[in-house]
Image 1: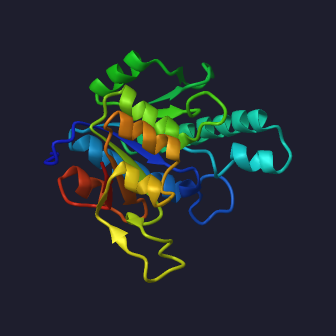
Image 2: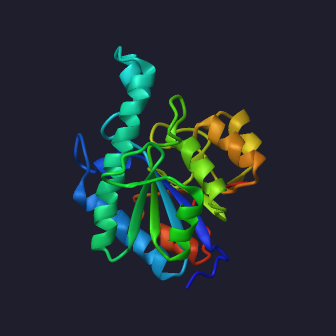
Image 3: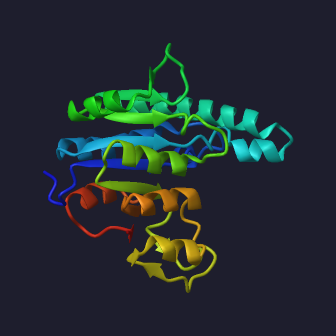
Length: 237
């Protein structure tokens, strides 16, 4: 059971995290491990929504840099998140978690349209809900989509799963003297340009008082430990 007081969370997972040891696409070992972590959350009685990126397939901003129209590139990126969501749904259901994919753009043959009230109903029925296609609009990152969905579904906490165990004063992979923070304010993250999330997402969470926890996706059990009340990663509030 959860001892953290959390009843509903929003987990943001980057598309790149699904790469694992691959150069492109989804590593089944990674999606299966994420599914086991999510299953533990559901078993603890916590409702979970998930926003997933598409950077392992297409990233709109990157496509624009190569010459593709930015709006077209962003639409391609949204479709990439739908592909990732379906892949993660398969892994979750193999792990015994009933899952629904809801897309901000209509792809009704493969998933549901995003409707806030329906999403909340799925969560109340102890189904994991994967929110795909970002906000459905170009120029907005999946970080912003995660912040928006967390607020819309009334999550107690937004969790961003990254490749490091919190927020550091500098990139710890490049600077061994980088300091890890246990807790920061929203404005501190923005003013120090810590680049842990898109600034729009930080501002949205700040304005709506949505706390953010940054954890390491690669540390097995961190999500479960967080749900059980342990201090994990960095809190932004």
